[in-house]
Image 1 (cartoon, rainbow, N blue to C red):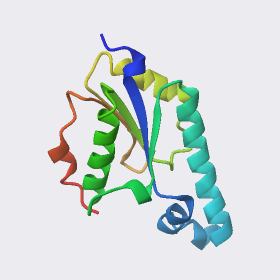
Image 2 (cartoon, one colour):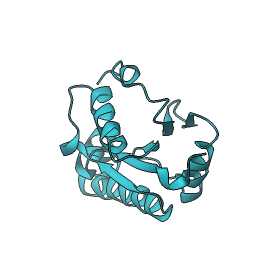
Image 3 (cartoon, one colour):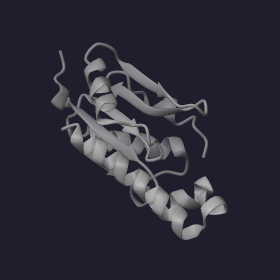
Image 4 (cartoon, rainbow, N blue to C red):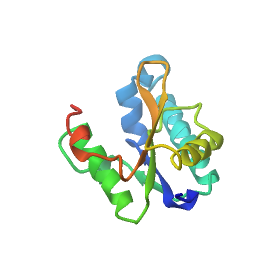
Length: 145
């Protein structure tokens, strides 16, 4: 059985000003407030992750290497796994409903199964949990972007 301390969290995100532009917050609230909203979401995600007691890694846009979303994500995941973690929980910064409880339940579930997906209302996912054994770089490289 893998202990919870073998699980790390990866927050994969753009910076607040980039996130605000990409998410088009500015169209509805103005540029300054859009950046503030994005910053609050990033801060919320980091706080919830830190409160879990698990190691937290951030991979903001300036540390993301690759020409596609999949390449950038795969490279960041591999940095975390290189620190001898057996499991990883990946989330972005635009999920206001993420909680420490969700993160800790995901970590516990990774002791029993190889993958966890938390669906979002827009049809995507806001959290992915993977064991190192389940991780497959090539499956991520098919993501465009």
